[in-house]
Every structure is written in C-alpha cells, then in structure tokens.
Amino acid sequence: MTKREALVAPRKRKKRAKKQIRSNYRIGLNPDCPLHGAAVGGFYFPRSSFKVTGTGPKTKFTEMDGAVVQLNDAELSRIKEQVQRKVIIVMKTKRGTRTQVGNYDSKYYDEAPNDVPLADYLYVEKLDKSPFEEISRPTLQDELDKSPPGEIKKLEE
Image 1 (cartoon, helix red, strand yellow):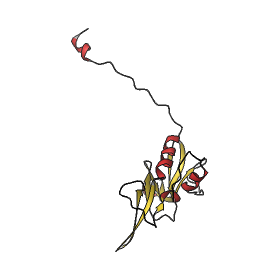
Image 2 (cartoon, rainbow, N blue to C red; image 1 turned 135 degrees about the vertical axis):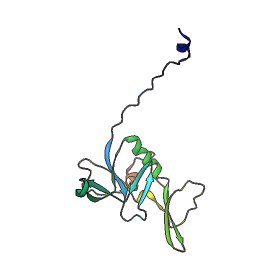
Image 3 (cartoon, rainbow, N blue to C red; image 1 turned 135 degrees about the horizontal axis):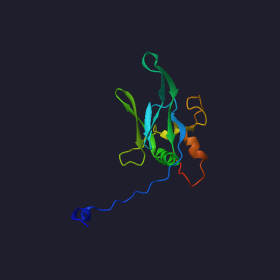
Image 4 (cartoon, rainbow, N blue to C red; image 1 turned 90 degrees about the horizontal axis):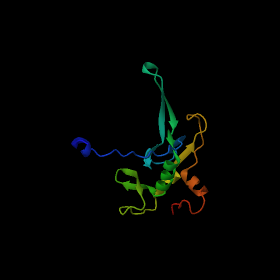
C-alpha cells in the first residue's frame, strides 16, 4: 500500500430514501381571506396565480384560483401540523387595517379578539383530473374537523 492510498478514507454509500408518491394538489387561500398569500409548511398558498401558455406575442395568461403543486404524504402532514399554529393577526393603525400571519404559540404573540385562525381560509384539494379545472374549495379547518380524534389537535378558539 502506498502512502497516498493510506490517507484516503473509504467512501460511505448513502442510503437512498424510498421515493414517495407525489400527487397534484391545488393549494391556496379563499377569496374572502384578508391576505393575498401565506406560507405554511414550506409552501406558499396564494389567493390566485396564472397559467401561462404560448410563447412570444402568443403568450396568454389565464388567472386561476390558488396554485397547483405536487405533494407527498409527509409534506401534507407537515402542512396540517403547522397550520394549526398559524393565526391571522389583524391590527388597526392610523393608516387603516394591517394583517399578517403569526404563530399563536410564539412568545411575541398577544391574543386579540379579532385574530382569526389561518386554517379557516386555506384549502388543499387533491386533483384527480386536469389541474386547471374548476373545483370546490373546502377550508383546511373542515379537513381538520373530519380527522379522527387524537390524530390532530384542533386549534382552540
């Protein structure tokens, strides 16, 4: 064995994680939400987005509710877990009303009577057909209500 071979550490092979099945979902905020978008579980939930078709002068922008993303089961459970802590904070200022998203378990959060759970406005809809069809939008709070007891703690009001 040469001196160079003695200094080189053997390579460790990383174990590959099993590929999780991803499905198309439409995610977003209901039109009556006071926010235009919110981030939960590493994903952005817009009120609306655009489908872009064509190129150059033939480019067309079609507005659609929410956004279409691919999610797996782990990402869905992370979104369900984190949305329970999110709240829309409504603040009245001299210039009018201001809204922002915060965590109700944060040490900086002071509960106010007009604060609203973000789950009331979020929707996550699994798409079986084309991702650009019209769909109904149940809120994520409706999904949390359907969950078996003990699996997910509902946001206390």
